[in-house]
Length: 257
Figure: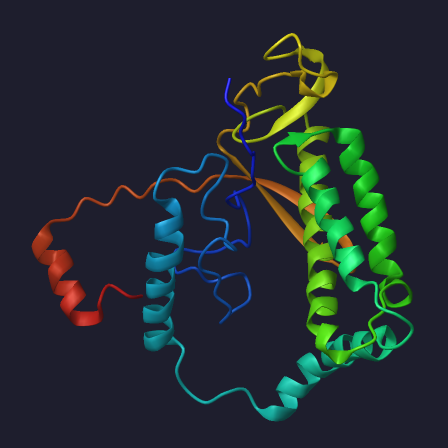
């Protein structure tokens, strides 16, 4: 056997998007690894499609449909200023009293690799979720920097913790609903089998039965909590048109609608 380094290379999930890579927030587009365009199994070339084709189509949609006057300043202020105040408060409370942001960052990254990468243990995931919830709740009391040059890492760490909380909560929900090993994830199962007898107990697994093949797990994060919805996958369009019509519509509007 050859020794390998197992890495989480791609994001098999992400922000929900439509066919123009627009999220559920109007005017907010997510193209690339951040979007949920890969699914459980990542087909070859899907990263190229998500990044290059996705950003091109999003730009075409924006150029055609997102025109007109911007939102009035007062309306914009009412919508975002309270969130801006909350974000800037992280800066005020983190400054002074030592510098531990890099240490916390490294520990946070190691925790995700330990419980949320290719080998997943349900108890480990649940414990990590509880840890992250406490860290988010007490973030302003825990994280400290002594120089403004480290400020960007404070905000990135906060976003990292939210992302870990959401992703791990989704994994826990999947397992609690009977989900087993599939795709690139092995969920430890004491009642399962080892791929090789000399491997540790954590490698015992049971293959998923395929009953969720036509379902998509949707996660909503709000007020520090996650809620879940399982919906049917969208059907593949069965349009059967001929070249002349498609070419005519392309010349008319670039097939952007």
